[in-house]
Structures are given as structure tokens and as C-alpha cells.
Length: 312
Length: 175
Image 1 (cartoon, one colour):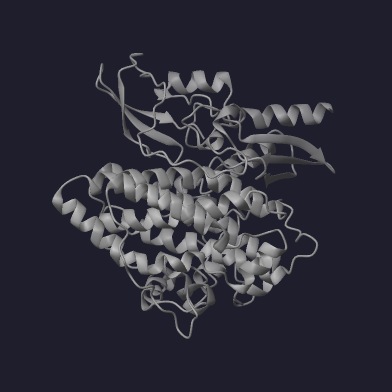
Image 2: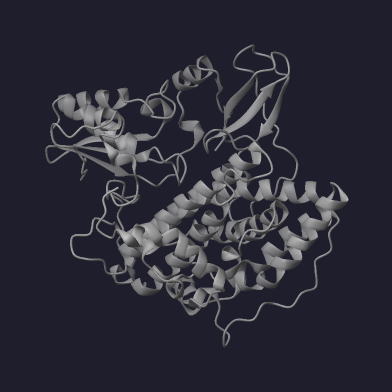
């Protein structure tokens, strides 16, 4: 199960070799040591199309992975230390959800995992994260928008947490035991994220003229992507029908109520904006993204792609 | 329960958490079961948070300690259901946290916890006001404390400061 990387005698060249990193199992990428679903029963429930289930897990997982990466870009750049740590914490929660969901996708349908050279030690979740192109990513486009200022990040975290919490809460009763467990954990985490974002939204809206100006600009820039969070892809429809997934259209009413509550408390009018069109009607869930995702993935994946046989 | 499984359980229960080394995995409540299956020790652990980066180290430590104690074949599996809650931290674990200057969590059934704020089927209520908890300073015992941030040095902790002794401290969040 565990591949503990050791050095032959006489090759020790630094203090790291003599203990600190002698056991490198804690380096997640490529060690295959830490399967987040180790020992979990991943049998697909009766009457569920494994391909639709895998596709759905990629959607929820990619939303988390891409937003997590954007939030992680704030690390050491946030306005103050507390917010820097908070955003990194939130990013870590989302990365954890992404790992479980990508691993669940791979277990449901190994066909979604990109092929790597024979003998590659890269586990399935990492192959999915680091070796898929933008067209195979299933996240909504709001997740990939490049970071603007802190106010815009607060807006995005609010909008995406409002939608995700409503979905995950319903997902706790999924017939798929793995998804139900991931959702039950995720609900607790996203509740904290949503409260954090909503409080900052209120603070910035009622803060200074400048903080309010920035918040309104951030919100106006993101709202064209709000509706996409509730559009139903055929895979989402299929898993909802099968009792293992959630049709995002079903949570829109609840999400709008929560958002309106935050807006009203903050004294902010909902901006009137037109939805951002897709390409022939196809958007993030279909793998049709904005250019920003390609650039983000190019950076995120470059090291892993250089070393498909690497042990880290 | 056999002698071997009792002994394996005792060994597993003595392994400490990598990030809160004053706590054993049993006191933290992440150690779910220790069984002998087909001659191998099978240990189940539950992550505190989805992204808990300490899972691999916990697994490593469990395998190493059990192997040191003569259990050659050790398997560690993840148990996701039910999700971990701070209510599983034992009284001894809470005392150890406080002793180490970390404020232990209140009951997760309290209003501060998202796990119970959601009534079955209903939406999770939004909390726009700062969370109010009964927290006292683990150093001087004063109740005059203020929340600095809901997110502290690790995902499972919030950051507080004491207005009496002026020291900052971590509080394990109700979860």
C-alpha cells in the first residue's frame, strides 16, 4: 500500500536525506500513498449510469478544484494576514472536496482518467487534475475568472458558496454513499465559507465609498455568470433522475433567496446584466470555457506534465 | 474481541495527531475502528476536514507504530460516513488541548455549529453576525475574549485574542 521512498546507503547529501524528507509520503502528488478513498466501497448503485455519475463528479470536483486554485493565488497577496489565512483555509477545504470527487469519478468510470505512460505512478485523481485539457474540464465559468481585487473575490466566493451549499445539502441524501458522505462533510465546510463571504460582502458594502465601489464593480462583473450555475447539463439531469445527483435548476429558488437576503442587508441592488453567452449554447459544463482556464491550467499543470513518471 | 485485536487497538489508540501532538488519534475522535481481518490489522480513520493534509501522516504513523509492535500486515482505510464532528473529541482530549493553550470546542449541537444549524431538508441558515461562542482564554481563564478570524493556523481552528492577558490563542471550531 505505501511506497516509502528511501535512499541507498552512502547517498545522503543533506540534512533532508537524513530524516526530514527520508519518508516523503506526505508529498501528495504522485506518491499514490494517500488515496482519499482508500478502502471506501465505490460500487456504483443499481440503475445508475457510471459514465453520467463520473461526469457529474467531475463537474462538482472541477468547480471546487478551479475555485480552489484561484483562491490559492491569493496566498501571500491578501489585504491582511487573517484574510490571507482564511482564503488559504477555504482553498484547502475545496481542494479536499475536489480530491474526493475526482477520485470518485475515476472509481465510477476509469474511462475518464487520461492515459499516462505505462508504469506512471500518478494516481487517478492527479491524472484528472493535471493531465486533462480545458475542454475536458467541467467547471462553471465563474470558477475560472482571473482574480480581480479582494472585493471581487468576496463576491465570487459568496455566489459560488450560495449555489454549492444548496446543491451539497440536497446531495447528502444521494443514493451514492460516497457522494452523500462527501456532501455531508462539504456542507459543514461551505457553510463557513458562505458566512465568511457574506460577512465581508456586508462589511465592504457598508464600509467606505471605495470599498463599496469595488464591491459593486466585482458583483456586476460576475453576475453575467450567475445563471450558468443553475443550468442543467444532461449528465446532471440523468443523475438527478437516478437519485444520486442534484439538478442545479432545483436549487435556484433557494439560492436566489439567500443572495437577495445578503444584498438587501447590505443595501445593494442586484445589477441588471445580460448573461454571458456560451459557444452555440454550450458553456463550462460542456467543456467550453473562457481563455482564462487555459492559462490557469497551463501554469497549474506544467510541472506534472513535464514529469509523468515522476515520484515526488 | 481477541487478545491480539485488543492489543492492536491499544497501540493504535496511542498514536498522536501530527498537528495536535498533545492529542492521540483516539482522543481526537478520528480513530474509528481497529479490527483484525484475515490476520491483518485494519484501522479505519475519518478525516477532520475534506482537505485535511495530515491524513497521510496519520496513516504512516499508524502503520509504523503497529509494525513496531509486531503487527506485520497493517491496512488503514478511510471512513467517510459519518463525518467527523468535534463532539467526538474526548474529555481527556479537551483537557489536553486546554493544557496546551488551545481552547477546546463547545458542543457541536450548539448554535455556532453548521452541523446542527440545518434542520432536516431545510436550507442552511445564513449567519451574517459574527459567531458567538462561550470561549475562555486557555492561558488566564478570562471570558473577555474577541474573535480575530474564523480561520486560524489550521482549517479546524479559529483565531481569538484575550483582552485580559492580551495573548492570542487558537480555538478548535465546533464542526
